[in-house]
Image (tube, rainbow, N blue to C red; front, side, top):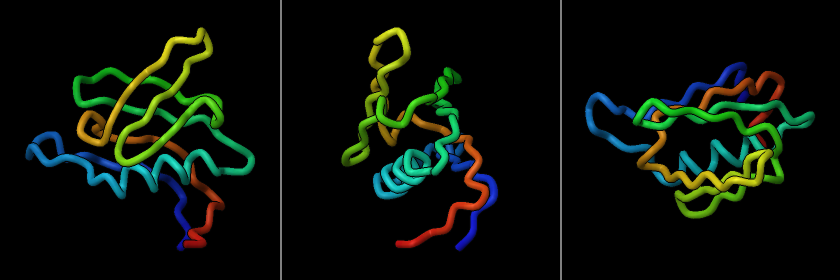
Length: 95
């Protein structure tokens, strides 16, 4: 499956949360891009941040931590994310 642009929504209006599997698979797909391209994480409270380095992100079981360029950790989970915005052009799904 070829995906050109990724925008995963959490369903904040209906109160639904992103499934753990979707959260993990999406973040891992964005981390694996070659060459890596930065992507944005948008939280349900409206805050957002850009992941600009793949090795600064750890994902496991619906939880993630990103270490920003200044060294500050950003903890987030599948319930707190409203969407990921990133370009997956040319990425093929091999799973």
